[in-house]
Image (cartoon, rainbow, N blue to C red; front, side, top):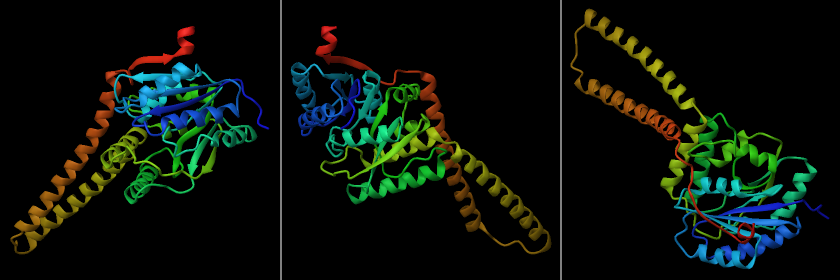
Length: 314
């Protein structure tokens, strides 16, 4: 028998979730009732363009344990999750996607792990990465690049699904990144953590296109590591040294032997170094962009409305 906790918050986001959100709410309520006698579900609408919001609003009218936080537009999955955590009031917070690829019923098992191991966070770890070939390959590339270039180590195939204590969430929310990447931030928050291996279903099309995956990878690397800049410096020093050696060789050859026509080789070298300069300039531009976003100090998200019978009663 799982000991009842004082209050449990189940947090999820809403984006093109019309086909799953009603079943998710039903299953999440049942899973929550098995763990706590005081639960709430916080659903964040991340500018969903379908009829998901209407479905959730009907549920809000029927059940005071459900609240809906509507953002003014689509801000992105990671920002929306943090908004949900900001509005959660539970002693335990269960973060999970509403697409039902992560079963809400895992809450009971994760709650047991959290208590038995005395940790502050139990995070989901996919047994194997699901999805199409492009999704699996891009996922492997992301984890490889991030492990090589970042100073933060994240487990491969980690999920955003996790069960967290109140103090852990409070610490996580202290990070005020304007462009947050959730999983690395959850590692930086510290505290004892444990993994929970599960089988993730693949029942819906991903909303992360290849372009969004590339952008997220670039954001994660430039936000959590300065290694690319150090690699640029080291490579530049090596190339400068080789250039000096080559220049000395050319001068020596010109002084001791006949000079040969080398227009093709000269152009190849020029094109190579111009291309290298363009790549380095673009990479530095990404870092400058991150700095610009932070110093603007714009709000990370904008909450348009909150629908909750509990709030209206208060």
